[in-house]
Image 1: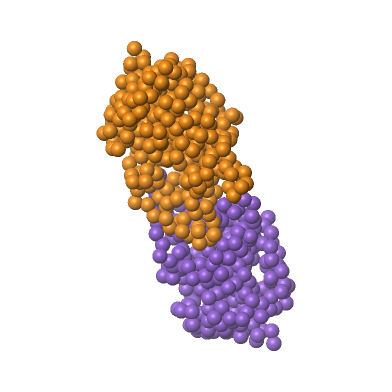
Image 2: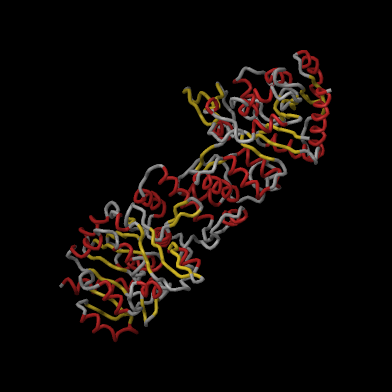
Length: 318
Length: 318
């Protein structure tokens, strides 16, 4: 079975770990969000791609969900001693090596997709990890700070400001001109199932869908497209997805997110058991819906979610 | 008193520490060798400038004479895990930060001289540290390896091969087209004394002198130019200077090095007490010569050497 998964960072990576356990023989292609990529200290940092790579490759800091396990912060401390920031972004020493290799390869002329493949040669994530695009796309967020309207990089909004102010607009800068990365459209066209993990619907899955051609390819693939709600009981399971959902005029409910994707794209939707009351509403919007436990407390629980998603896909197909 | 010093790495840096103790009120400008600069992992590394900066700024690894004290090597270990080398060059985590800042500033368009000034704002070396040039100069060494003639970067010759094969030629690639860095010629013209520390006469002081205009400015400054022999008793005090001296046809003796610089450039020359027998030979070549202890065993001993150099300069001037 060929499965294509659109993934952001922590939520996508953890779901993928469960999917690998649930479907060990499947051929999984991950289309990774690169809209949260950022240049720091002259280095190209790809937080979502790295989170997927480290999580599936066994190098992740399990507790925080991003960055390397057994990490130290000596380089960052020295950079701060030079007065060079930002200090709010936690780049560890082991993590720095990844960004140094990536930046060196990009400078040598390799596209991000080739660089990602090279990095994965070490991590062996057990999936094919494809950046959504080799072109630069950067998610920017419009905010009002101290009475002044400003546009900040998504990482600044998410990590420095911790989404403490309203996101007035979320713009994937460069997406309109971006082309899907090598293999992306081919993987979608060859897929048996397409899954949206419980990743952020706006800045993760939404950004991937904003690359011209990807949404259309998914809609036209003719195979079941099933998503899992990142909203449980009216709040994001983790992160601050409600803030960016508000920016696109979508309520932070399991039902509203499904309707935001829409029946033109989505065939099936899993909501958490506590949201069983919205099943009818989602189905009325033309999307097959089931309520199951959606908390990724451990890999077994996550594998169970993946099984439910694949089962719903078969139900849709039949 | 305005003193200009042409410095390489460890020898130059340690001499400067003695000079600062010997002449605490002096205005010292250091013209640093950049011919051993190298690009590693996409980062610009300036070993000699950094050794001067770390030594005078209190950040050096005292025992090995280069790199940062209390250093760790986690980034390098991770790079090796990606299969990315070279592994023979010892870049530590704290040191990496310096190269990251430098590379980022160079990429932003600042010349190396401005970058060096910015880095020194943290280290406060107590001297004005000027790169010999803002233009790229790289010392290459011709060698025969396994029967094949090859040209390697100086660092590869010095660090990886440990000068274990003959240097058939030493070429400061790019020097002919290089211009002296901002302030270099002005500092020389304004100097009261110019000193050559016991640095490598070929790949350190020699490389600085190979930048068109610098040698001429020193010769025409009309002030005493005094050097200290890096060769004691027929062997380099440290390093493998004999190997690169052979490449330029100069014997590894205190006298031969003085005559290599020549009386057109050098007014005074200090040799070690064990080489007292060559004093007459050096003086016969038109260079005032004195024999004094030249082992930089500690800062006091080094300050004594600096005092002897300044005394010889006054003797020459009178």
